[in-house]
Image (cartoon, rainbow, N blue to C red):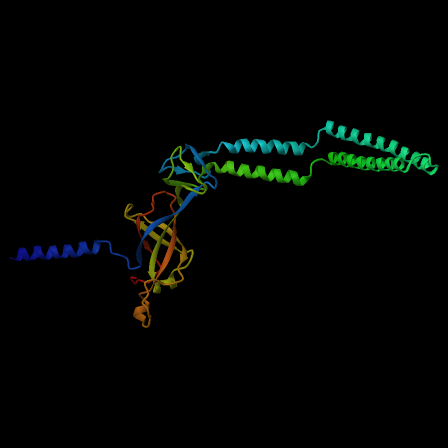
Length: 313
């Protein structure tokens, strides 16, 4: 009988010892779900999907091509405008300038003869040798040739001055616009990311701004948790917390507090008493250090605030 009592006593003591060795839930820990930022990429211009360079689940580097679209009319239009720009920048050919100068000089020579005829006609008209009609015709011919010579001189001066800078700037702007459209034909990753969803196939015809893929920015992974109002005095922006996940028991990740909500949630309609005020919770967003690439969006995480008061939310 004494032996049975001793055995029972020993088992009771052992159970207490085992219970004391079990990990206890920390009262300054809360739970949340890990999330990551997403980017929905598209081309601002339409086109047909010609090639795909990545698949769902691929890890992408910044600038890596995901898909290439085809718009056959764009290269031809760019070549035409580039040729037009080259022509404007080169300016008039020497032969054109020489021809304009020869035309001006010819007009000046004809004007000299017409002026001489007009002076003789003036003398003859004074002597009443020619009629009024002949006198007026010679004077009008001189005036017309004077205007023609002035117009020829203007054309020659314009060719010497070359192309107007405004015309060149306008064509350059058209060329830059086409270059932008051609760059949009290649869809690239804006930063290091993971291709989560690829929404297109080769041969698809896309409208402008139609979503092509969803990317996960694994370099910016975070968790949002809710803490009681009484903890806010011990939690500061830029402070750190310990984060653990079930996939890696015993391993702690560092979380940096980057946002504290300014408004409470789950608050009673009328907060009158102290017991009601401590039921208010505030959202806390922590940026996680995922250099090891172990954390994934959707994981459940326990966040421990070492300096927080030992009160459960």
